[in-house]
Length: 270
Image 1 (cartoon, rainbow, N blue to C red):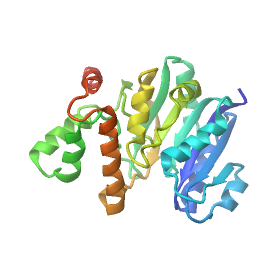
Image 2: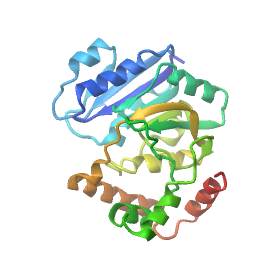
Image 3: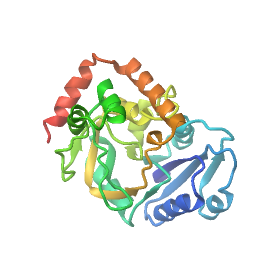
Image 4: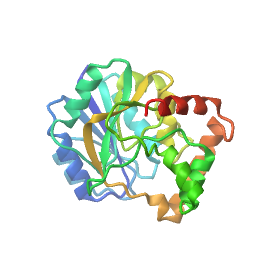
């Protein structure tokens, strides 16, 4: 392979400092790597930083959405690396983190996707290991989270009894930091473009889980400035709702036999 690791980042009006900090984290790695950036912003404001830090930069001149933009980047790296990292621009990590996950995958060839332990900027853990969602999970946590019923339901959905202290096989991992075996990525075919934004990561990991293990790995950590945009912005809430409808149209609303089987497997590990 030409590279140990390829990395793709999608931008949309992100602060220059944010992407600069991420690129500085990446460039400390000893792994032979290549960075591809797809910029969905309306105006190109990143030329100086991407040129200075030797990235392959593409300005899309329109908002393709995260999944479609990542697919564009993925097409550029096929056959060039053993592993591929899909990361949000608002991620930070310490030196050695990429090597840590790389070595973990080298030692576990049956695993195709890894999500590390993810913390907020203030040091609190992000509970990103979740069950595959039932429609009521998404509705209750968004609109009725003040009720006892919703809190109980959300507690199981978010695996509140899980201490994030051991490896967990799960078909639902966050898209903020996806460390992937490239051969598995090629087999699953990237993101489903029916999802403009939101739930494309749920759908992706669920499809990947059909052909390989997808796991949470507590031996590595990253920091993520998660903003929960759809909780604050009506336009983002609209996109989130549309994606949820498309997700359940694809996988099943009230009846989804596979969801029940996979969720039981996750709960049995707690």
